[in-house]
Image (cartoon, rainbow, N blue to C red; front, side):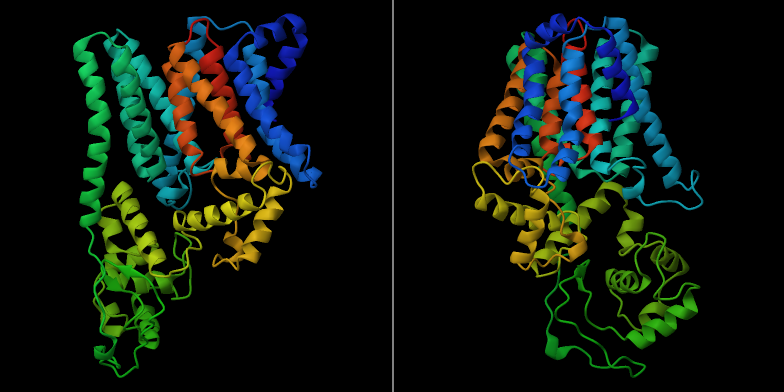
Length: 490
């Protein structure tokens, strides 16, 4: 438990009047459903064999239970108090993103970090969640505020956070925003009486998915597709006389060029030594080894991997390679477009038989495949919260997984993790709780809470939200705060 949670719990204990406050908690449906999520998962602790790991997992999830009781049984905040705490929450997220930008620019540390490492304290997916929640709060206050100065401040913060989300290359983040906006449009198109506003809401529902598909199509077609290779017609020797290596097993393409052919390793190493102070076996600033980065970068330029190919690289190309760029397009079109290309590249390599180890998206397919096999063995009540980890590792071994051992990780999908731990029966109960919480948010006109439920449910498709304390605390506190912490739902 964090210091903040301990202080909240201590304050709750010292206030006494336990029966009265627990009665208040029991009369609030939202509080009960939030607490029930923890209680249902706790059932998986009752039949686990690894007690120690089970205790750690339940301790990690404890904030969901504690926050629902503490906030759900306490006197709600007034509007001024709620706005103050919301402002602190937004300011904290903005501050953290600024620190991330400073690290990206090399101001905070001696060396600049990559875009995927600018989330300094928590995973980039959880930071994305916090950014999206902050954006939803800012939009709410932007609509409610009547002062031009405040409106400008809120709008500026929204633009900044959206820019940072782009810099973070968070596809999940924009997916959550899109799903949230479509859901909001569907809801408000039914409850808004003003005809013009209803048209705006319906337009959101239609335009967002259509725009997303158009953008995805444009970006996908902007990259070259792989070209066919006639292996019998490939040159066997470089102009300098070294025999080329043509590796048919390499299922990697860069801008349509096959990475595994026309490799003269001796020439490559010698010519690189004349171009750079870094050895070809050294690490780039991004942590990747120079050799594979150089080979992929040359392929992206349409150059052979020999002395002539390296000699054609400019000084800027050399710096890009030393920085870890595997494709020259990444230096010209960074951010979200770079991430989109990376997604396409991962799936292309995976479908051509490439090993997904270390690739965040395609290795998730292996995680999910492995998790489903575990679920099929114990479909109804699961294996217990403490034993899930061992079952997952054993399944990788039984399936002779293509993933390297260091990448044989949990499901990275909260729904699958719950199914492994407490079975499909438990998963259906937890899903029922989320559906009821969503309904309560709509019924009580709590848009921020409803949006939070939507974004968390989407994020659970790609990560184990409740498997780390940051995720449990984020959801436990904000869900209770936005639904139960204010005299009137917000």
